[in-house]
Length: 232
Length: 232
DNA sequence: TAGTGGTCTAGACCACGGT
DNA sequence: CCGTGGTCTAGACCACTAG
Image 1 (cartoon, rainbow over the protein chains, first blue to last red):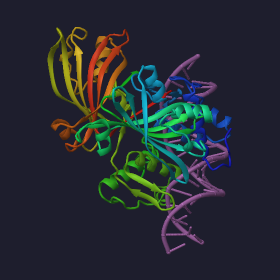
Image 2 (cartoon, helix red, strand yellow):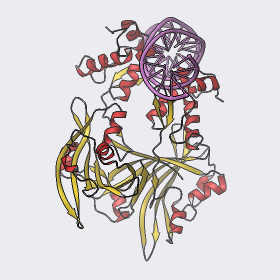
Image 3 (spheres, rainbow over the protein chains, first blue to last red):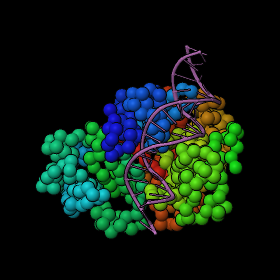
Image 4 (tube, chains in turn purple, green, red, blue):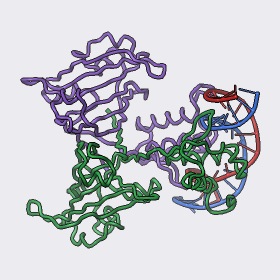
């Protein structure tokens, strides 16, 4: 149900509900979602409000409308192969590599009246020497994870901690990919010159319940292969 | 004045009027346009209709709204979201853009004793000018597509042709993503300087039967947003 | 014909910004 | 305070799709 007198607009609430339903698989790729009329009756809101919610989801690439037919789930889900989001540590162990994390920086920051724990880590694998592969910047909301700053993430897995200590399970990422130029920090870390372009991924990680649990920015070493497969 | 009983929706008519006014300089960059109430009175339509017109112009990057202040002309740079690898033409049409393709180069090449039709196209959308978004290099095996070189892909959709003429349906892609530096060609095409890093996607497209039907390399303009979602 | 989305009206109340 | 945009209601008629 919707919170009629809450601070969050009804169309945003509905938008989030539909988005979650789609991502949780309640409405699957290609399937019809309930019609605008049905939704407006179901949630006791007008069709205009329903339309606003659906229009936003169309802009976000979740839904496609067809006149006279209905509104369809229209996702283009991308899967990754060599590259992994949900736990660098776990992934590397599976590859029989020794994962290595170095906390470069950590602090409490405040963004839009919310406090976050900011964690900057250089990550890589341990061979004869340390081979750095990514530079990770994470922002984790402290209201969701009180006391998070007390853990030592050079030895602990961040996602493992979220799961075990906070029972929060990373479920989904939404990211953008950009090419960037290296700066002094990444040049040193990845041993590249200043003309080397790098890959950066920026976005959000969401938990099971659909809440954003982490804002993340990762710069990848050129040694990391970024591959993906997707169906058309 | 608006044509009240015309075939063109009122909000589209208003949208075009405002767009023209902006492009003709009647409302200049940073200036306020008339308020929603004023426009609704002026054109004898409801505020909802005015809002729909303005919302579209915001999506198109002409206007920015500020709560309590008004709506300002704001010709921000448009960024295009593209998470599709196959079917540029179809994708752009769905976005109500006019797709534009320019064949820069085509030839027959031989790789590992197999002949391919090599097609290099600059692709983008047509607005007041051509906005180039990608530089596509395709390699299509001629044994699968005999006579393919006879089509004119500046006007025809490649994938459409594969489907209609050869009954081959692109089904899956496997690609790698790399950051690259711009070269002279891409600098000119995308109007960027030589220090601008770009995104390149390289890989293969497979048909329904699982055969590789195309080797592809796409360089993206910085105006293209490369976004993806995935479950963990 | 019934159900869908597409467009539009005529209101209402609210939150924000500047006077 | 007033004017702005932000949200929402409760209707209406239309065009399109499918049985």
